[in-house]
Image (cartoon, rainbow, N blue to C red):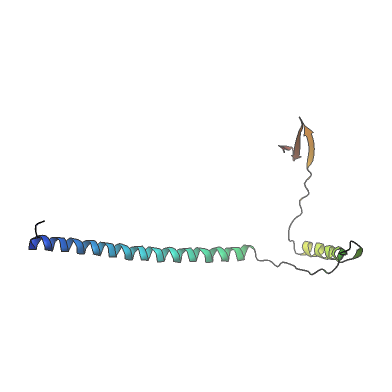
Length: 125
C-alpha cells in the first residue's frame, strides 16, 4: 500500500468531514422529527380527550343496594331493587337519557335452520 499524497490525504479528510457533517445533520433532523412526532401525538391525545369529555359529558347515577330480594341461603328477603327501578325510570325519563326501542324479533325454523326476522329482514342463525 502506497502512502497518501498530501492532496489525497486532504481530499479524504474533507470527504470524511463532509460525511460526518451529513450524519450529524441527519441525526439532528431525525431528533427534530421525533420531537415533532411526539408533540403531535400528545396534541392528538389531548384533542381526543377533550372531544370525548365534550360528547360524553353526563352523570352516571350509582346506588348501593344492601338487599336484593334474596339472601345467601336463598331465602326471600326485602328487595330494594324494585323501588330503585321505579325511581330510576322516572329519572331516566326526566333527563331524557335514552329512548327505548321496542323491536319484535320473530324466530322460525325453516329448512332445519333457525331464522330470525326483524322488520322483514331474515337472518339465518
